[in-house]
Image (cartoon, rainbow, N blue to C red):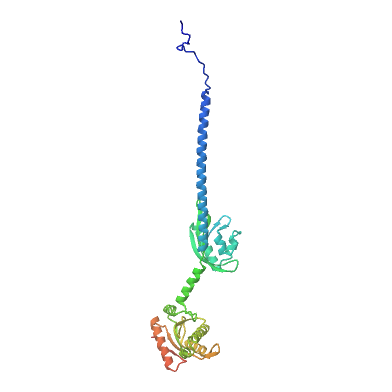
Length: 346
């Protein structure tokens, strides 16, 4: 009998259809995949850069806010002037210094009108020189703002060039009014008597050292002042000294230098040729003006003055002071209310 099962050893051909792209299609597919990956990479890079830019923008805004606050606290503003048309650019603080609305239109002519004549002249000189020499300058200037406020500003400037040609000038403006007032006050306290407003002893001696050979020195000591001070108190005594200072300035307002050199003693430097008769006339004027009663409130005080005089001639300032001092004591010994002249050095 024959086995009716199929003969598996006989392999039948099988047709299989494969949907295979052409080489061009494969290339396009690969290229598309690459573009997609590149776009994704670029998009990720842009997003990363956007994050960085946003962070930098926030940091810049924060830094600007800190700068504006520091600028306002320090009263320092930044300015720029384009030389081609004199166009000005200011930060907020500069507007505040000049009492102008922030962001309003400004021009150099209006700004210059705020400067004092002396400061404007000096500014023009320094600015012209800086532009010509391609450098910068610093200037402390006095201004009167559009609202009438008197201020001092410290102005710094730098000239910027393009291809060797000046195109703009820029810098900072700082309100130094308080610094200036403190400096002036400190100098005043160092050089002037706060009670009378006259130069003090140190300024007096410096002035005496510069006196010419034809000048003279008068030392004045008040008569009766101690009694006013002891009887009516230091407030009354201070009022007397202030009035004496005023009268001496009025009497010696031409060529003489008047100072309070201590207590109730005053000094007058005459730095001009003067003979004995001229000195006598001046001494009598001084004695006469100080003899007049001093009214203080409901009270009236009577004081006087003794005067000692010495001429410079060939003497040093130290010698002339000693000679005038000796002459002063001679005047007091003669009964007060008079003057004596020290003999001229041979």
